[in-house]
Length: 289
Image (cartoon, rainbow, N blue to C red):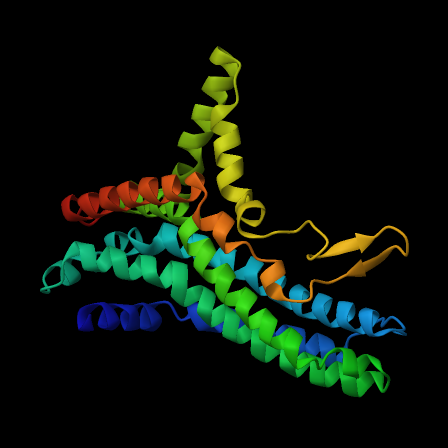
């Protein structure tokens, strides 16, 4: 455990973008809230207040989630390639640290540490931006941004998103680490070239689209499996009034039982574990570039 904690601290020392990137992005949003032109709607009912407050929080969460996803992808591709390229792998292999510990620590950083840091940055930024906007607006819009129950529900949603994303995207993370441990150059190219070639070969010679559907499902299917976006108790548009109605609780929006009982979830976990084991084996056999 102490070794893994030390290795995670090492990743913070060597990859300062883990916290600098969300801090800079958050600062940009704060500057936008301070000096940007914000067009605010007029809110007349409690449902409109609640809807606007939820949309505000979700918008901030999605922006940070997008930035985090891009950086986490790059981090995984660079994680086992960079120290082979700069030959620091020779130093790390001279220490009493196993390759398994090294790979697992980098995986933990990508799937949990980076999202949690982004989650904290999103929370702080949203609080500051809500404070600034509520002062600048000088209207009832300020009250829509300060709803304790919505804030608490967003924390639950964030934690749920971090956990489910780490599980769902484990095979993607395993593949990126496998490529990072194997490639001698052009890591980004090798990360998408083999799946693309498989997709093209299947389409040309078999006329099917199994590879494409599987990849698309894995890359974009998390929300469909982990959330419950339909139904009267979830987010829906009232056809009579054409207004958006929010769920009374975040528990009506998330779908943990459906996610953890879905065979796709655990098939992905199995594939991810195999790919990570492959990355560890390559790490043991590869040296500097």
